[in-house]
Structure formats: C-alpha cells, structure tokens
Image 1: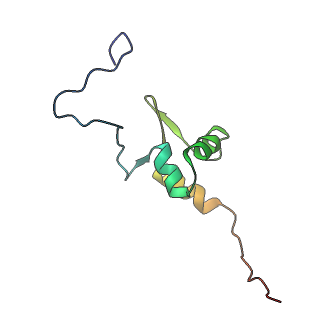
Image 2: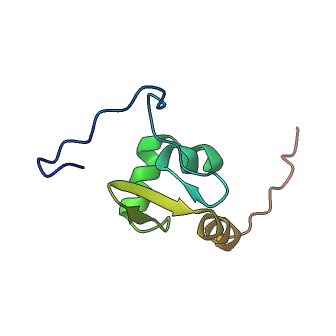
Image 3: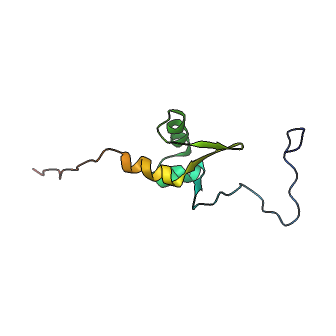
Length: 86
C-alpha cells in the first residue's frame, strides 16, 4: 500500500478480482467455509469465537490447511443409528 493507505493500481495484464491464496498451504474464509460446508458468515463467527484456528496475513484472515485438518480430526465422533421403521 502507498503511504496514503490506498492500494496501488493494477498494471496491464495483472489479474482482476479477488486475490487468490495458494490452496496447498493457506485457505481464505470462503475456502475454509467451503471445506467445512459452512457459509462465510458462519465461518467468520466460528473464527471470532476461536473455534476455528486462524491467523492474520496482512489484511486477510487465513487458515492453515494443517490446522484446519487438525480441527476437523479433533471434532467429537458421532454414531448415527439407523432409524427404526414402524
């Protein structure tokens, strides 16, 4: 960013739209929610409550893929019983 706090203009040939993070190491909020089957709003809420481990990288909130995998692995196991039909 420039001293005025405004990001520089993109040069010709630079990609437009949202910035992408390498999916192999870091996930953004949207990608984290997609991986967990959550909306972006629900993902942000869980990050704010400290349920999902996240970090700040510049102005972005990111989740390390390894920490997300550990979070999922630590969730309690559930046994789904077959519903009886009458």
